[in-house]
Length: 332
Image (cartoon, rainbow, N blue to C red):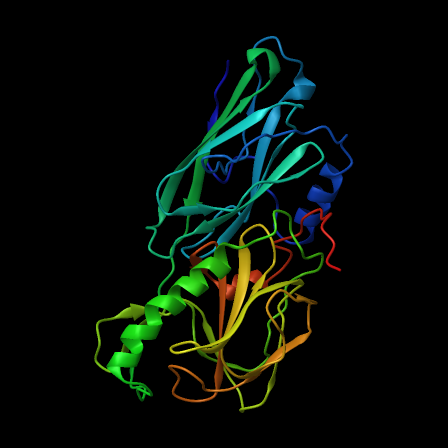
């Protein structure tokens, strides 16, 4: 068996921009015969091609990712296939990479891969094993090149609106509610259009910034702060299901929307919430109004995007055709 190893610039990666959508659309024309039981350990992310001994060229498996060189905090879309019926895909990763559940469509399996913001720049080794009926095995190995990103540092103060006793009582319970909401997800993508920014206004604090608040130890800003007047409408970034809509101590009025495949968007410090838990929402639907509830020092929207429990760069989500995927899920 040949096991070629490739780097990001030389592998069969998904091209940027509209070409990515075109390539994935062409993949959908292949016959639908993929069956991948179970959930993989985690991912591969290099476009390689391996031929098992005695197997015809038409059955070679490939893996493709887009973008080819993500930075810390970014997303990468991985496509694997064709995978014969009854195949089992196993994916291994280095620490710092987060993987969505697999989404199967036709002969291809798709994953969303998240890059932790603490991951150092440089190559990340990937390995994918495809085991088919009769003991047939294919392996694809390669490297994903992690780019460099600099994060800003800021100092500011925020008035504390509650007592230490109240915080000790409520915050652990509310953290668990948020955790469970982020873990509750549809297995397939619920969106069929590009993501949009929920509020078109001035960005007052970027994702990943190092923040020193009230002289406390430094913390990372895990979302995007968008400043706007109190009462400004906030829209859903895409189709999904509301998993949380509740007044919380630190986050204020908070809405979490599940978009499927463990991908979610969160909207914090709302003045009011216009949706209820369990309700389907559409891209662009008003889900609340800008406020300064919770731990906030002025009216703004804190917009956060998560893959599972990992917060990733929200701005990347609305740039280009990053998450073009063949969709079958329908929200009623």
